[in-house]
Length: 66
Image 1: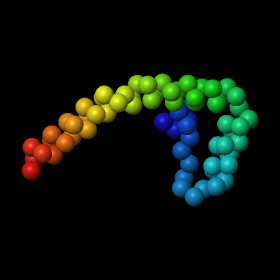
Image 2 (image 1 turned 135 degrees about the vertical axis):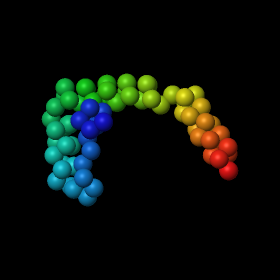
Image 3 (image 1 turned 180 degrees about the vertical axis):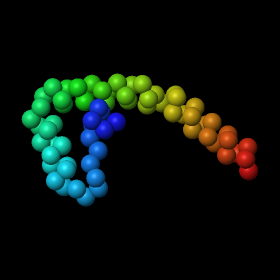
């Protein structure tokens, strides 16, 4: 999520990347907030059992449609 868990910049836009990196390098509060938000996102959305169940469901859908 742009601006919450990290930053998105246009592809090959080194100036935009530099600005975002500078913002992180100079703002400890921003780094801390984004780090916490990123960790919370991973804990909530990247559970191995949930991911496996989702993938198995997708395989079952594909198999049923063939």
